[in-house]
Length: 147
Image (cartoon, rainbow, N blue to C red; front, side, top):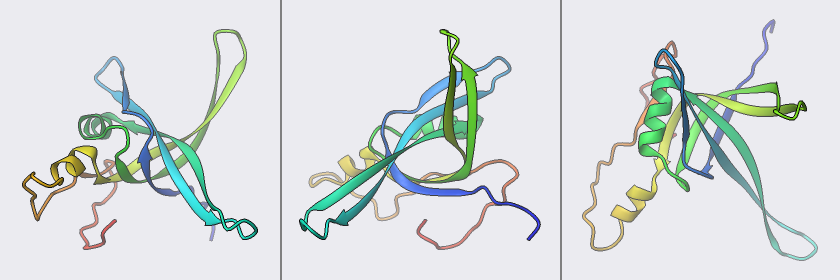
Protein backbone atom coordinates (compact mmCIF):
# COMPACT_ATOMS: atom_id res chain seq x y z
CA UNK A 1 0.00 0.00 0.00
CA UNK A 2 1.57 3.27 -1.10
CA UNK A 3 -0.87 5.72 0.49
CA UNK A 4 -1.85 6.59 4.01
CA UNK A 5 -5.24 6.80 5.72
CA UNK A 6 -6.63 9.47 8.02
CA UNK A 7 -10.19 8.41 8.81
CA UNK A 8 -12.22 8.72 11.99
CA UNK A 9 -15.64 7.21 12.76
CA UNK A 10 -17.41 8.27 15.95
CA UNK A 11 -20.80 7.78 17.58
CA UNK A 12 -21.41 10.08 20.51
CA UNK A 13 -23.45 12.81 22.14
CA UNK A 14 -23.10 16.55 21.58
CA UNK A 15 -21.60 18.28 24.60
CA UNK A 16 -22.99 21.67 23.53
CA UNK A 17 -25.01 23.33 20.78
CA UNK A 18 -23.35 23.98 17.42
CA UNK A 19 -21.45 27.30 17.46
CA UNK A 20 -21.43 29.00 14.07
CA UNK A 21 -18.93 31.45 12.56
CA UNK A 22 -19.66 33.18 9.27
CA UNK A 23 -17.06 34.51 6.83
CA UNK A 24 -17.15 37.06 4.04
CA UNK A 25 -18.23 35.42 0.82
CA UNK A 26 -20.97 33.33 2.43
CA UNK A 27 -18.90 30.47 3.83
CA UNK A 28 -19.40 29.32 7.41
CA UNK A 29 -18.03 26.87 9.93
CA UNK A 30 -19.73 25.10 12.82
CA UNK A 31 -17.96 23.72 15.86
CA UNK A 32 -19.20 21.47 18.65
CA UNK A 33 -17.79 19.00 21.19
CA UNK A 34 -18.71 15.31 20.95
CA UNK A 35 -18.46 12.89 23.88
CA UNK A 36 -17.76 9.19 23.40
CA UNK A 37 -17.88 6.80 26.35
CA UNK A 38 -16.09 3.59 27.21
CA UNK A 39 -17.70 1.51 29.94
CA UNK A 40 -15.89 -1.32 31.71
CA UNK A 41 -15.96 -3.22 35.00
CA UNK A 42 -13.04 -2.85 37.42
CA UNK A 43 -12.08 -6.48 38.09
CA UNK A 44 -10.84 -5.85 41.63
CA UNK A 45 -13.79 -3.78 42.89
CA UNK A 46 -16.52 -4.96 40.47
CA UNK A 47 -17.30 -1.27 40.01
CA UNK A 48 -18.68 -0.06 36.69
CA UNK A 49 -16.37 2.64 35.28
CA UNK A 50 -17.30 5.09 32.53
CA UNK A 51 -14.48 6.90 30.76
CA UNK A 52 -15.45 9.84 28.55
CA UNK A 53 -13.32 11.13 25.67
CA UNK A 54 -14.08 14.57 24.20
CA UNK A 55 -13.62 15.36 20.51
CA UNK A 56 -13.73 18.81 18.88
CA UNK A 57 -15.78 18.54 15.67
CA UNK A 58 -15.75 20.98 12.76
CA UNK A 59 -18.36 21.09 9.97
CA UNK A 60 -18.33 23.50 7.04
CA UNK A 61 -20.82 25.45 4.94
CA UNK A 62 -24.09 23.61 4.18
CA UNK A 63 -23.25 20.77 6.58
CA UNK A 64 -22.71 23.32 9.35
CA UNK A 65 -26.06 24.97 8.63
CA UNK A 66 -27.83 21.58 8.75
CA UNK A 67 -26.17 20.70 12.07
CA UNK A 68 -27.06 24.08 13.56
CA UNK A 69 -30.68 23.71 12.50
CA UNK A 70 -31.29 20.16 13.74
CA UNK A 71 -28.80 19.41 16.52
CA UNK A 72 -28.64 20.48 20.15
CA UNK A 73 -26.74 19.49 23.27
CA UNK A 74 -27.26 15.82 24.15
CA UNK A 75 -28.20 14.62 20.67
CA UNK A 76 -26.59 11.41 19.41
CA UNK A 77 -24.79 11.52 16.06
CA UNK A 78 -22.61 9.32 13.85
CA UNK A 79 -19.76 11.16 12.11
CA UNK A 80 -16.95 10.33 9.74
CA UNK A 81 -14.04 12.60 9.07
CA UNK A 82 -10.33 13.09 9.43
CA UNK A 83 -8.04 14.27 12.23
CA UNK A 84 -6.54 17.72 11.75
CA UNK A 85 -4.11 19.40 14.15
CA UNK A 86 -3.47 23.12 14.04
CA UNK A 87 -1.73 25.85 15.98
CA UNK A 88 -2.20 29.60 16.41
CA UNK A 89 -0.90 32.53 18.40
CA UNK A 90 -3.04 33.59 21.37
CA UNK A 91 -3.45 37.25 22.31
CA UNK A 92 -0.85 36.84 25.07
CA UNK A 93 1.70 35.62 22.50
CA UNK A 94 1.67 31.96 23.51
CA UNK A 95 1.32 29.25 20.90
CA UNK A 96 -1.87 27.21 21.23
CA UNK A 97 -2.48 23.77 19.77
CA UNK A 98 -5.68 21.84 19.09
CA UNK A 99 -6.74 18.62 17.42
CA UNK A 100 -10.08 18.55 15.62
CA UNK A 101 -12.19 16.14 13.63
CA UNK A 102 -12.96 17.64 10.20
CA UNK A 103 -16.38 16.08 9.52
CA UNK A 104 -17.02 14.83 5.98
CA UNK A 105 -20.16 12.76 6.62
CA UNK A 106 -22.73 12.50 9.39
CA UNK A 107 -26.03 10.90 10.31
CA UNK A 108 -28.31 12.05 13.12
CA UNK A 109 -29.18 9.08 15.33
CA UNK A 110 -31.42 10.56 18.04
CA UNK A 111 -32.35 14.13 18.79
CA UNK A 112 -33.87 15.52 21.97
CA UNK A 113 -36.85 16.74 19.94
CA UNK A 114 -37.43 13.20 18.65
CA UNK A 115 -37.20 11.69 22.14
CA UNK A 116 -39.58 14.29 23.58
CA UNK A 117 -42.09 13.67 20.79
CA UNK A 118 -42.03 9.91 21.43
CA UNK A 119 -43.05 10.25 25.10
CA UNK A 120 -46.44 8.76 26.03
CA UNK A 121 -49.26 11.03 24.94
CA UNK A 122 -47.45 12.22 21.80
CA UNK A 123 -48.20 10.74 18.39
CA UNK A 124 -45.33 8.72 16.94
CA UNK A 125 -44.37 8.29 13.34
CA UNK A 126 -43.29 4.83 12.22
CA UNK A 127 -41.14 6.31 9.45
CA UNK A 128 -39.15 9.16 11.00
CA UNK A 129 -36.55 10.42 8.54
CA UNK A 130 -33.25 11.46 10.04
CA UNK A 131 -31.08 13.89 8.09
CA UNK A 132 -27.89 12.43 6.66
CA UNK A 133 -25.17 14.31 4.85
CA UNK A 134 -21.99 13.70 2.92
CA UNK A 135 -19.59 16.42 1.91
CA UNK A 136 -19.57 17.47 -1.76
CA UNK A 137 -17.43 15.22 -3.92
CA UNK A 138 -18.17 12.17 -1.75
CA UNK A 139 -20.52 9.67 -3.42
CA UNK A 140 -23.69 8.95 -1.43
CA UNK A 141 -24.10 5.30 -0.53
CA UNK A 142 -27.65 4.00 -0.64
CA UNK A 143 -27.75 0.93 1.55
CA UNK A 144 -29.85 -0.41 4.37
CA UNK A 145 -27.14 -0.17 7.02
CA UNK A 146 -28.45 1.37 10.27
CA UNK A 147 -25.42 3.66 10.58
